[in-house]
Every structure is written in structure tokens, then in C-alpha cells.
Length: 368
Image 1 (cartoon, helix red, strand yellow):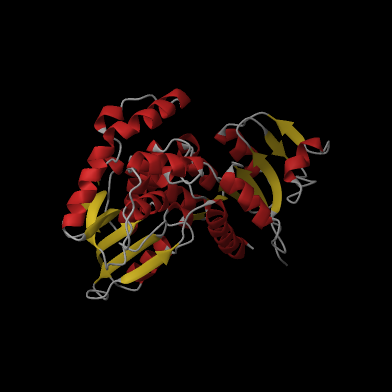
Image 2 (cartoon, helix red, strand yellow; image 1 turned 120 degrees about the vertical axis):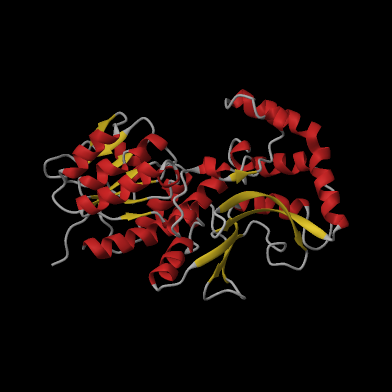
């Protein structure tokens, strides 16, 4: 007999919305018993945990008098509620919240499995990384985080399979920021030319919703560095955190002290044009070498060197042709001369959500 599975969802932004929509199309989804937004939480009433929150009409569920409505819960309160459900429970964390990620061991030790694209828990200090997997073992729970790197591209699972079958990773080259891939591919296309200034391009991309609301979150390279940290740990490098990675920020030094407030964002956007000449000089230098600029990360295992930054790449290379696309090239003992390559669209709410659904289905299969 198939077990009844219970589900909690934390975060209903762009990814969370898309996830709920796709979840509703599953033939037999888990029973949704917790739906947490920034300031409000919906719960199925305990101890019976019934009725469940209707997935198809979750956005109107606050009008359902049978459900429990309350303010934001702490991670410990969520663990207490989910841990008492009458069956295997899964929590999907759609946020990028560090505090929640630091509480993953609490969930896992209570037997609550986790599916998430939240990079914070897997790229912070090694103590948290170790504690997450120790807690999963202790609680007989599962943790799936494929979506932290590459969206739907099977980067982490491919690396795990290579290592499990006795291969050894030597070097990785990657383009893991879809936003910077789009910006640089437009600013300096592999074929043809562009005369648009860097600041104008960033402003236009922000207006179109192609960057984070604060474009500095794309331009500082830290999100990319978090992904490299996770990859490095998967392949056996005990990287302490992002601070061990050489990161070249595309934010001018003079603008790095601006506040993170909405006013700071506007100040940054208004002042960025003053530094267009620097990007243009980098562009000219690449053109003289018949190359283009791309934002590339690399991991060299023998030297334990991990870095991400602006690179000149030859025009006929695969990386040069990328515009908004993610790319991972894996050189291993088996793939020495011709690397194993993963390439494709890996970002955006719909794509990220589909990767989460795929991970959820894997967890459901193992728990059911």
C-alpha cells in the first residue's frame, strides 16, 4: 500500500509560484499541509492534518475557514508541526534565506526530507555542510539540492555518478550565471558587433526582469562562487566557503560601499555609466586578440585553485557562443582529451521549479 506523503512549502515568490503550479499538475501530489510566506503561514489543522491546503487554489486558501492561519513561524516551530504529521514529510525551501538553511539539520534529524535550490546551506562553512548530511543519516531523511547548481542541468548528479563509478575529476570549467552569460553575450557577441554601453545593457536587462532586482547580486560574482563551492565539495575538495574562491567582481570598486537599500540600488544604477570606459577597455583588449569576454569559473583539482571572473575566450569556442545559457565542462581521468559537457538553459522560475519537481518525485519514490 502506498504511503500518504505530507508536504510543506516555504517561499512563494517566482520559483514558489511556478512550483505550486507544476505541483498541481502531478497525478498524485503529496498532501500540502504547510505553506509559509514571508509574513503568513497556512496550516492543515492538527492532529489530523486534514483538510490539506488545496494546491490548485492555494492563493485563495486564506479564505478557507477549515485551515489554520498564523504569522511567520520560526524554523523550530515548522519542525515541530511537520514532525508530528502522520506519515513521511518533505519540506521544499524555495527561499534563499540563510537562517532557514542553517536550520536544515533540525528538519532532517526529525526525519523531514528536504528539496531546495537554496545555495546558502551548502556553500557556507564546512561545519554546516557536514551537519546537514550527518543529520540526514541520523533522521533517515533525504536531502536533494540539484537545483542549487545549474537549475535543471544535472550537474551534481553527473559528478556524483562519475565519482561513484571510480572516475576522478581533474578540472572543471563553467558558465553558471545565466544573467552574466546573457549580458556579456549581448555586449560582445561571438559573431557580429554591439555598440550598446555596459551600463545601458545592465539597465535594460534589469527593466526586463532579466537581472535580480538589485543587479549587484548578479555582478558581484558571489552567487557563481557559491555554486563553485558546492561543486568543489561534491568532488571531494574540503572548501571552507566562498572566501576561499578568487572572485572578480564586475561592480566598480568605487560603488561597492553603496547601501543595499532600494536607494542604494538606484544610486548604483545612476552612477554605473561613469565606469563604462573600464568595460569598454576590457572589450577592446579582447577584440585585439580576436576574442570575446565571458564570465567563467574554474576548479583545478590538483592545485586546489578555484576562481571566477572575466575571461577572454576565442570566438569559435563553445563558451563564446553562449548567450543566457549555462555550461559545465568536466575533465576527468576518463574524459581527459574531450571533456564531458553539459549545456542548456538552467535558470528562470519555470525551469528552476521543474528541477525541484523532479527532485521531489525522486524523494517521493524513495519514501513511498
